[in-house]
Picture 1 (cartoon, rainbow, N blue to C red):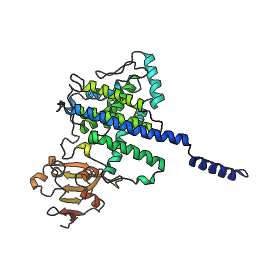
Picture 2 (cartoon, one colour; picture 1 turned 180 degrees about the horizontal axis):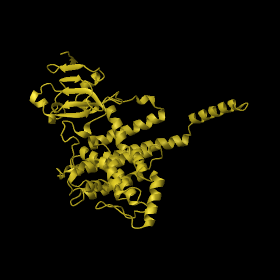
Picture 3 (cartoon, one colour; picture 1 turned 180 degrees about the vertical axis):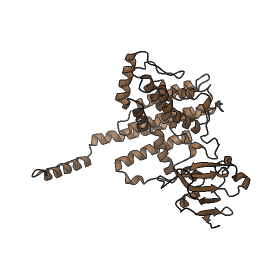
Length: 403
């Protein structure tokens, strides 16, 4: 029970807080407006620099056709190179890319452990994974923007409070401008470089084992190898990610164009060392990786989230005529589930021969979001019950069908 009169006091406090929230300090607001102008001008200058950097990359014949399995650990070290060049407590001259870094003394290891705990709350492998998930979100945010650009927003931005909506729109606007430079290469490379570097630092500090390091970094390496075609694309994504990273952290603070420009200049200078003749990326083969072993007609980095929430199992079976050859879905049916996570949907172009269908190499198991990228026409039918069948005649729409 509240003491007598406490209810009125609480109400007065809430009213006072509400009034204070509505009262804006003109000095602060003027500083914010000035920051917005400075930030916009900085972005324009960085876009010019990034386009110049892209032009250099486009003139290079990048080594390709490597295999991820040939030297996965070496590939991970190269992925971490931009971030691993930095200096932090316990790592006085950067970690490099040639071998796993080991602290030279127990004093260095202690200093590095203190830094990792204070900066990222990392004390073991589990906390490392949490830090990676919570800290390096540039690519995740980019993936949130892409359905909006494609006219398939997964949510209504107007449901957010005004301040959050303003920040969201600012970040999405910048991401759209950077997209003109890096395409759908996104900012994944920046996140991968930072994440693999942080994992290497955790290993150097003795917080995770060598096995834990590779276990943490391996999914990142696989995704990068699937996403990009060469080190030039990776370098451009790192540069664009650096711009986005700096700007997103400056949105809610006073923006310094001088600090921002110096930051990107250092990033570009470092990346240019890697891509110049004889540089570590210029002379390294990119190990292009296809997760399913098949080269799809839509590149991995061009896939978007077609539907924010999927009800029920999301796996399905589809023909290579759709996934590899690019044919539209001509026939689809929903059977009983045949394996864990199976939605029961089976999708075909409709022109496959019996011989083709009986060869398991021509079929694959995918999730519904992936195949919806290949043919969005199927989206409206995916909630139909088991036993449902649809077919497309003469290039027309998919229509219900009964045998």
